[in-house]
Image (tube, rainbow, N blue to C red; front, side, top):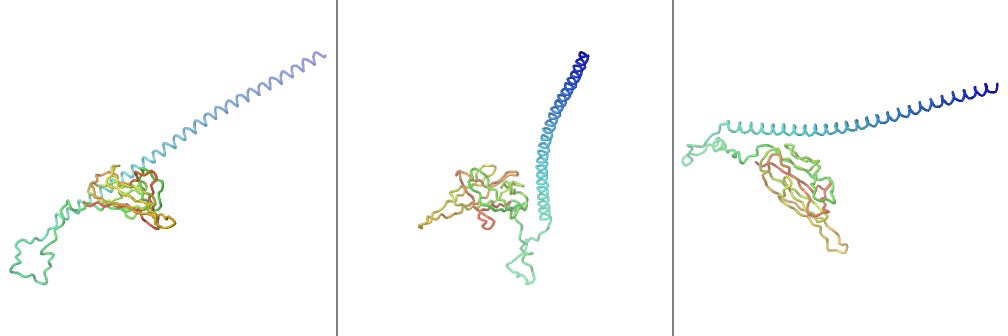
Length: 266
């Protein structure tokens, strides 16, 4: 009888151990599945991040393409207006003054002198072929500047859409002769230059002054320059800080002391 009871107890314990072992196997399998799921999730996250990066890049490329398309449309519009204006000027007949003798004839009071002596338009080489002009100023002081472009962020005029306030660069919509002017204010010694595709054209400097009083009060000064240069289509014109590793360009919305302007002459 005792042996039978012992056998039953041993059998029961074996059943319990087998059940526990089976549960452990199930737990291990479950943990394995969890680990595999975590790997899949990490892989999916990585792919999602990669897709997000690709989407951002595609949006950036799309924005650049749209900007390029806008520039091309603007250039086509400018060229079309210029051609239309030239066609009208060439096809419009004008009255010449050939055979008009002023020695023995007086001009009646009701005769329009402008019709008798018409004002001839300037030759093509002396006329601006399109309305391209811009002007912008700096709304806040830029301190500790070194070898960088000044971003004149407030646009007053941008005919031809050549100026970009985010980069501070004017990209020529058409090749031609342009006039550029820039001025800036500073409390420190600062050098600025007007550069075309990074090549310097003209320079300007502003230097601080110490007033002769007991407080050694520092006064600001302004610098600037103007130049007339030929710019090819697509070239970028910027005002850049250089020479001094800790320059300052001072300006504000109230005192608009730092400016950058340009216009197509012909």
